[in-house]
Amino acid sequence: MAAKTESHIRVAAVHAAPVFMNKDATIDKVLKCISDRGSSVDYLVFPEVFVPGYPALIEEGQIIHAGAWPALSTMKGFEAVADAQIEALIKNHALTGQCFVVCASNYIDESCLRWMEENLGPQELVKRGGGWSAVIHPFCSFLAGPVKGDGRGDTLVEAVIDQRELGQVKVWIDANGHYKRPEILKLEVCRRALWADDEIAAESRKYDQGRKV
Image (cartoon, rainbow, N blue to C red; front, side, top):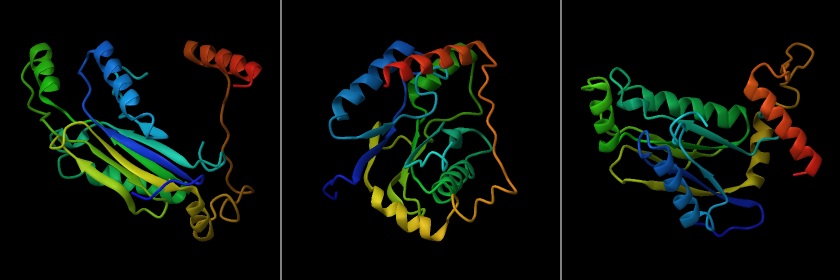
C-alpha cells in the first residue's frame, strides 16, 4: 500500500456481521474495531443498521461519501441482482458526485439466522452470506474490494485515497460549474423542524455552533 502524504486519507469499509439484535454487544464490537484500527485508519465506515435500529453532496464539496448497504443479496429473488445494483449506485454517486465512495456492508451469519428462526420462525427468504464492501475512485475504479459474503469473516476493506485526484474528475464532469444550470434546476431543502427528533438535532447544532465545534 502506498505511503501517505498530507493529501492522502486512509479509508476502510468494515465488512462485518453485527451481534444480531444485541445492541450492547454490537456497540462493544464497534468500539473494539475502532480501538484496534482507529490509529491506522482516518475514515472508518460501518454497515447500515449495524447497531440494531437506525441510529448534500457536490454543493458541500464532498470528498468522501459513506455508502452503507444491508446484505440484500441473501434475500430470495435478489441473489443475482443486489450486488450489481449496489455497485451501479455507488459508482454513479462517485462519478456524478465527484467523490470517493466507501461502501460498507454487513453479511448474514449463523447467529443472525439462529435469532430469526428462534424468534420469527423458519426462514425461507433469507440465507447466510451476502454483503458487498468496497472503496471506489471518482472515476469508478476499485481502490479496494469488492469483498462479498462471509468467507473472510469480519474484515476491513482498506485503501489510501489521494484528494488531489479529484481535480481530474472535475475536468470531465463539471457538475458544480456549467453543467449545473441553476437558472433551470434548483434544489431547495426545508430546514424547519418537522419531527421531535428534528427539534433535538436543531438544538444540538445551535450548541455546537456556539462552541464552534
